[in-house]
Structure formats: C-alpha cells, structure tokens
Image (cartoon, rainbow, N blue to C red; front, side, top):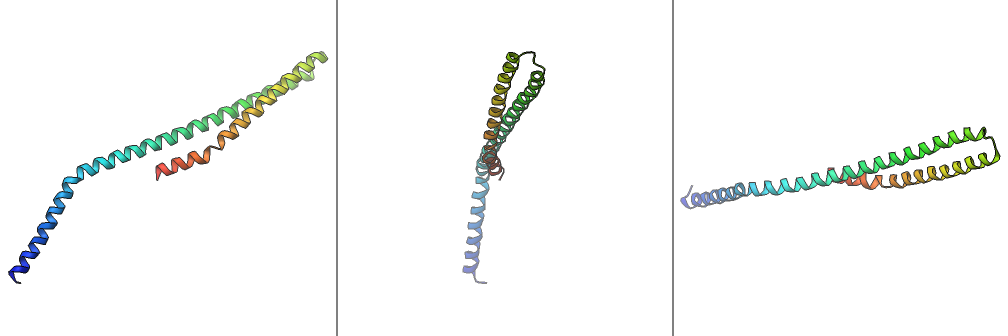
Length: 129
C-alpha cells in the first residue's frame, strides 16, 4: 500500500470518528427532546381517554335518568288504574306525560352524546399510535 493511500484512509477514519463524537455529544439533547415529545403525546392520550370516559359516564347517567323516569311511569300507571276520581286520574295522566317527555329528552341527550364516541375513539387511537 502506498503511503498516500494510507493517509487518505486514515483521514476518512478520523472524519468518521469526529462524526461519531458529535453524534454522541448530541444524544442527551435528542433524548431530552424525544422525552418531552413523548410526555406531550402521553398527555394527549390521557386527555383523549378522559374525554371518552366522561362522555361514556354522561351517556350512562342519561340512560339511568331515562330508566328512572320509565320506572316512575310504570308506578304511576299502576296508581292510575286505581284512581278514585276522574280528577286524580287526569293528574296522574299529566304526571305520566311529563315523565314521558323527561325520559325522551334523557334518551335524546344520551344518543347525542353517543355521536361523540367515534371522534373521541379516533382521538384515543391517534394518540396511542
């Protein structure tokens, strides 16, 4: 091997060593950046999961509200069948009508909240990815 080629090879190796040293010095900074990015992504994931959980709980609450109103309607219908007077019968009928409206509204709110599921599930999936 000629001495010039040896010097050129040595310079190439020396250049690669300097490159590796720069990369090694840069590793803590890059690690900190990636750690910060990961923390942000984890925070986004937590927010998305919490939002989904809140919506799911609200749907359950609205469904429970509707079920409670329907149970009261059943009780009132039983009470209505043994009403002593027409006036009492009409009062119970009005109460039943109000509860039916309340149950319908609670179900409508539950369905409206369910419409949020796909968007929130996508947000969770994106944050997980």
